[in-house]
Length: 275
Image 1 (cartoon, rainbow, N blue to C red):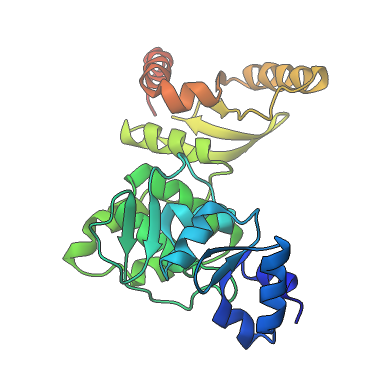
Image 2: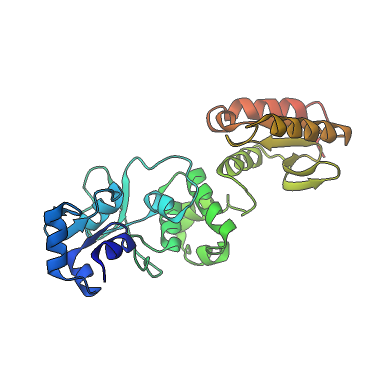
């Protein structure tokens, strides 16, 4: 096999022994190192110059990325980039700036230095703040990677109580990380929350609170042009014509000013009887 193809398949970094198992010869590896096409971070490991730092570190540790560190590679939502590397390994747990996770319950990724998706989610439920873990799990469930029941089966016992509580925040109905955060905010306030509701003449709205307050949560991709803004105004107007009230919030509101958002929602709801 071509050494570059093998390296790309492995995530741009691999142990030399793994490449040899795939048919790459030592002569090929040595020639690539001499030419500068690949680098050797340490004895027995080779990498392409553009190899992601986290995967290089995982291979150097004889470990696999998991939890928040695996999310990007699996295309899962994250509220915050990981402040430390999350690894599944048998290394000492006193290493600085690294979170170590174990055990593993499903097969690992067949090519990349990643744990399986389910284990990345289970580790997140145990490790991350509840809302961060819920966002990550929600995106995976929406894609059909696994099911809530499958995860719950692996969270039995008293020690898994906090992880089960984080999983309780997951419904699989959120269409973005922001919607998950907003839904948890509204439910924690004891409000009646319906998600992704279809309204006549309007279409689908993100939230319907207490049966009459529509709340829309917009990411950065929205309102990018004049046509989009006109479309949104039309939706807002038709929502009001239909007898509903409307509040609309953006990324900064939900991520950094949640209590202000909740105060506004409660102020609007306070003017109408709660159903």
